[in-house]
Every structure is written in C-alpha cells, then in structure tokens.
Length: 88
Image (cartoon, rainbow, N blue to C red):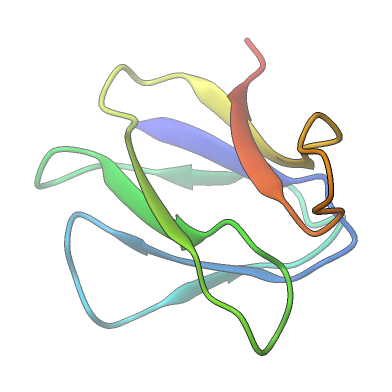
C-alpha cells in the first residue's frame, strides 16, 4: 500500500502496475490517494506538465511510503518538470 498526493498546479495522469487503463488523474490539491498495489506497486507518469509533450518516468512504490507529485525547480530550463518525492 502506498499514498500519493499532487502538490503541483497541474493534473498528473498516471498508471499503476503496468495497466494501460484505467489511467488515474491526480488533481491539484486533492487529498491523498491511498493505493493497494496488487502487482508490485509500479507507478508510471508523465513528468512534463505540458499538454503537447510527453516524458514518462517509472518508480517502484512497493515500499508503502507516502509520496507527493511536486514541481521540480532544480531542472534548469524546464519549468514544467514534475517529480515524485517521498515525504514520510
């Protein structure tokens, strides 16, 4: 089981455990979404918030932590970069 929250101003779409559907949307300022991983706890999301550009990244969240999608302000030249950070 792991927990995800979106702390960005963007909707973040992601898939869990290699599924192609459904695709979940983490809306800005939603409460925490708690997921029970049934096939490993793999999350895949588009780390670039622009509508016309896709850059997918995958993380293993099977450790059961609490995570937040946050703006990655360390990426020089790309203000649209979103990262998934462990916060617990």
